[in-house]
Image (cartoon, rainbow, N blue to C red; front, side):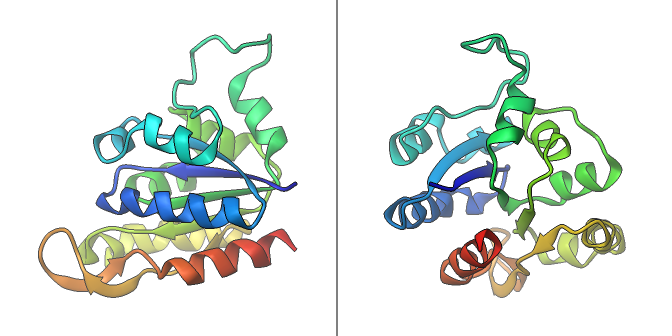
Length: 177
């Protein structure tokens, strides 16, 4: 069984993670969720734990069940790391090598492929800094599932809408082959 570390960040699109988990579980994948503090404003660890059937990880400094560093043990388990939804903040931190939370520490500690599905306001997505950060991550082999044009939480229609879930699932399966 393939292990997918699913990183969830503070975007309104975090609720779509429930459907992603359900679809992946039905296909026989083991989904382990790592959430940021900001993600908890949109979705609860209880929901994610119930759907994934696994403990949800969020605190880098919580003592593990057995003597092992959490970010390294999660990084070793990963056949694939998926960040969906990915905010401009998480993309910037990864591009800069900042590891100030569990998710960024897991990603930087892992040798597994990384697949990122951005979701944010269109101005944030199109901003030169965000685009530069995306290009930097692509240079080191991270893959992106581009957002689509759609209704955004700010009330506008623009690019930044999380990619279609069918496309996300297809890209995950392709990355695991």
